Image (cartoon, rainbow, N blue to C red; front, side, top):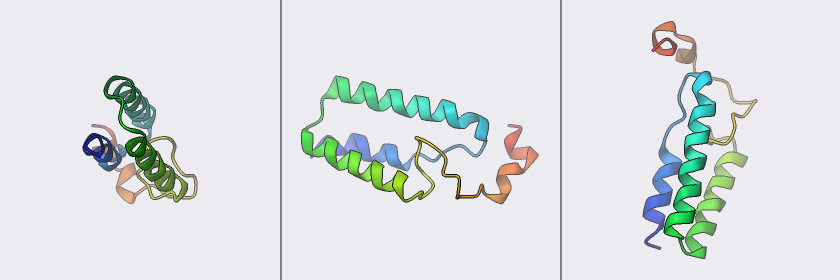
Length: 87
């Protein structure tokens, strides 16, 4: 279970507020996970626990899924603030 200490913090990285950065964020996270799985070769139990946690987070539209944005969940009010989006 040592390899979970490298996988679970990935689920805690927040998505950017700017919708234009969602694609870059999802590509970075996907390539990070792919390179981690190929380089470190985590045990089967750790990989299954991580994939199950990722599935449940994305399935429940909890808001931190980096694979896609849930259409039912609204953006926060401050996402349209020009002082935040413009930076």
